[in-house]
Image (cartoon, rainbow over all chains, first blue to last red; front, side, top):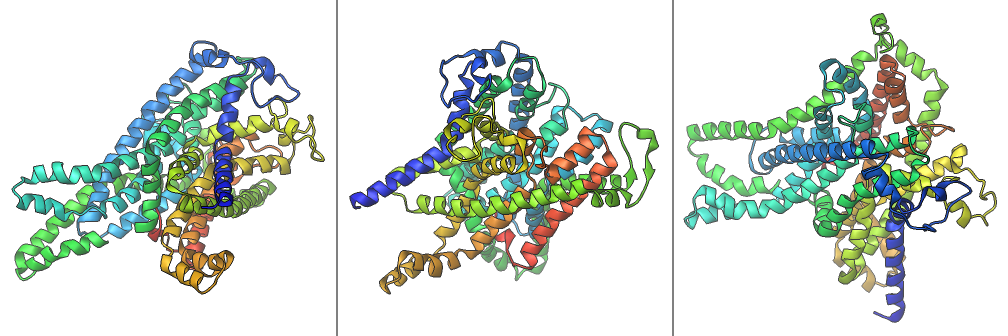
Amino acid sequence: MSTKQKLGWAIAIVVVLIWSLFPVVSILANSLKPASEFAGGGGSFLPQTYTWENYQMIFTGGARDLFLPALRNSIGITLIATAVAVVLATLCAYAIARLDFPGKRIILITALAVSMFPVVSIVTPLFNVWRQIGLYDTWLGLILPYLSLTLPISIWTLAAFFQQIPWDLERAAQVDGATSFQAFRKVIVPLAAPGVFTTAIIAFFIAWNDFVFGIGLTSTSAARPVPAALAFFTGASQFEDPAGAISAAAIIVTIPVIILVLAFQRQIVAGLTQGAVKG
Amino acid sequence: MSTVAEQSPTRRGNKENKAPISDRTRAERRLGWMLAGPAFLVMLLVTMYPIVQALWDSMFNYRLTAPGDRSFVFLQNYMTVLSDGVFWSALAVTLLITVVTVAIELVLGFALALVMNSVIKTFRGVVRTAILVPYGIITVVSAFAWFYAFDINTGYVNNWFGWLPGIGSDFNWFGQQWSALFVIMASEIWKTTPFISLLLLAGLAQVPGELNEAAKVDGAGWWQRMYKVTLPSMKAAIMVAVVFRALDAFRIFDNVFIMTNGQYGTETLSLLAYRTSITRLEIGLGSAVSVILFLCVLLIAFTAIKVFKVDLAGGKG
């Protein structure tokens, strides 16, 4: 590579880095600013004085009762919705990839249709029905609609993964004297696990991101997840300026995303592109 | 489905023996539906059932503030919605956001895909990690990040770009339609370009390398190869990416809710449906808006599949 080309690549990479990370750094900087720097007249990008007071506010101070229950709800509801979606999708995708039965295509098309569904169209009827049957403002009342977000993409991603697994290896292991359980555990599980794991990460991102269900189907801290609670930081006037507290809470819920991305970028990209190539 | 094809020798081997295979086939079918059924049922339950319920509710004059007054009005709610200027302006804003964001994202996403496709291995991980940050981040968080950057009290954008005509320390980005939509669209583009670029990256991987080499040997320049070889070979991937993003952009809600809550002419269809049914508790009217929103999405998908012959089922991950 010539020096000119090297320079070109360096510039391209720096531009991509700035573009991708700038808003995150911006909100991180906000979370470290004291309230006085949000007082008006336009702020600066970096804090003039650094402070932890916004983090104190959401963990021990005035915003504690708003943020901590929301964090607990977000973690609990998202993990359960992800786990249920991945288990159901694994069974479903296994059947689609390995068994011959009528209706396979219908299942895949349904998943596709569900993934295009406008979420707001579901939230209105659910709002009404959930109130009547007591699911309004409960964990279950959010886990169920979250499945409509996480199941379709999980089925498609896993079906694409499973179709690439050389299933004949299982029989080969059995020929070599392994029992069918051993063959499954020693051969198939290690081959399938990365796909299942990647799918779980993608499903987690989607459920973690939800806002419409979170704000439409909850009314108290009993089930309200963080994205919805952030909107209430502005509404409630219990602090002088919610910008710092919101930014700090936003950074807290971004940490899991950053960790997953840093640790598993290769797998996530493979998972997201796989269906597109092999579907 | 390649796996099925690979399996079939065993089944074909059994075919000579008629009675046992039909048993076996039946068992396999039953097992197939037993495994796939729960996921299928849950999907139907959480989407089909609510939309049918919405269709039903939309034909009643029904508000939660006066639940006793519920009466059947057939299509009157739809008339009310369709004769209201608020609906049409929400539809126009939604369409504008969809068209502008998808067009810009397609260009940016393609550039990103090219960078990811040809960057040397050492930096591939860095670039991938960087673009996955917007993908993974919560939309509401991204909306707040952009909001605070531009906001008249907390933002620094006015300070940085004060030299531009019309922008000064007292410029309120969220005070009128065009500038509010500008910020809303910028945050939407930032958040969702990675998704489109990953779909395009998958498309790039399918472009036959020999074809590009041959064109190079024949003396075609970079632009020529791009237009004559690369883009035509990845037409399917581009169409799939556009349709998926368009359907997604059409449902835009989170950023608008956070930044303006639909004020100053930034209301979108999703926000209108939400505000009508959940804020104002007009279940009948809100359901009508929800059904119309659903029909719009259906229409876009249908047009894509029938008119532009996009094989969506062939390209979704």
